[in-house]
Every structure is written in C-alpha cells, then in structure tokens.
Length: 290
Picture 1 (cartoon, helix red, strand yellow):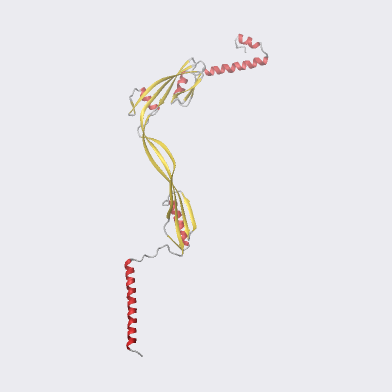
Picture 2 (cartoon, one colour):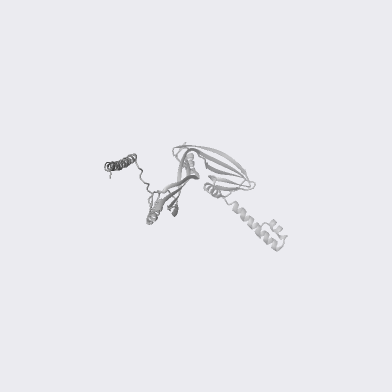
C-alpha cells in the first residue's frame, strides 16, 4: 500500500481495515487485467492475425486495422446422374403347396447369397425325393431409397495461400488459371466481435470506444465441376420353387396331327378286317344249311 499514490491511500484510509484490504485486491486485479490487455504487441497481433482459427489479441488504441482474405469461386456445374441398385430378395420353396424353405437376403438371386440360398433349397427338395424346376419370379418392385448430390472438380482448384502468393507477386494467372481480386472495407465500432484473417476464421474483439477497419480481399476464379446426382434404388423381388413329392412336373407329350391320322387309319383298317371276316362267316352259313 505504501507504493500507491497518496490520494489513493487517503481514500482507502477512510474505510475500515477489511474494506481497505478488499479494495486493494480489487485494484491489483484490475491493474493486472489492464496490463494483460495492453500487452499485445504489433508483432504478436500480426502473427495471430495471419494464423487460422485464432483469437487475435487487441493492440489497443482508438482505431485498429485488420485484414481478411476470402476465396469465392464461380462454379460452373455440369449435371450428371448415376444409379446404385440395392436388392431385397426372398426365395421360397414349396413341396406339394406347403412352404418348406424360405430365406431373404440383400442382393440379386444371381449373387453369392442368392446362389447359396438356391443351393440349400435344391438340396432340401432333392433329399425328399421330389421333382422340381427352376425358380420362378413371382413379384418385383423398385422404389427410390435416397438421392444425393456431390461435386467433383474438373478444373484446377486454387487455395487461398496460392492465390495470395500469386497476388503479391503481381501475377495475372495462378497455376494457369485467371483470377480476380477485389478489396473492400468494413468498419465496426466496439464493443463487438468480428471475424478476420484467412477465410475469416479468426476472432477479434473490438473494445468499447474502439473502432475496427477491416480490409477484405476477395479472390474469385472459375471452377468447373460435375454436379453428380446419385440415386439409390431398392429392388424387391420374390422367387418361388414348386416341387411335387414322388411325381413329375413334366407335361405329357402332345399328340401330333400325323400321329393321330396314322392311329385312326390303323383303327379303321382293323375294323374293316373284322367286318370282312364276319361277313364271310355269314355267307358260309347260308350255303351250307343243316
């Protein structure tokens, strides 16, 4: 307390002992905060401002000049569409109309899971000594599950660092790509918090009674890209194997026209022979009466 100014010591002396101690602590804390606030040098300020995702210290003063750098490409999109197909498949095996096997899997019947299920169903039916054919598609439907858009650059992508370097070097192009830079200014009076620095990812607090002049450099260039729409379809299919125990699924052979005609000819011929024999027998009986 002896190091404090006499005017301060006199004002503190009017209060009791405890009040003097409390006030002294408050002054020391306030003085430390003031020293911490004004401890930001210009070198430290510039270093933190050029970094990303940083809380930049305040160098003090009534006016502070900050810098922001932005990249805003002009996108030229070429729409494309691609389709992804998901499957939900069910295989059912029936023996004499009753379900003896059923399995669902993700994938087409021709896929690995489908082949495995088909092999299991065939083995089960063959073990029963039944007769069966190939699986039959009984139902099929397709629905859209999801649709998403992604962007794939087809021309060079320029970073903020490369554009800043090309701009400082006075180059009209960067990596063979033409670009433009536009400078604008934004003024903010405190108290306020502003975003500054590369990509405006830094945070800067403008103190009460202080003003901030933010110089914003915006780089623009043309970026070609494919706008890819990916549609995912779900195809639901059901297959069925029908089996007969101890029977045959094969159909009886059809009788051709030629075979039918030949059969009728033989039949009529046989009838003619029988009728001829019967007639001769009758005549013989008439010429030889008893």
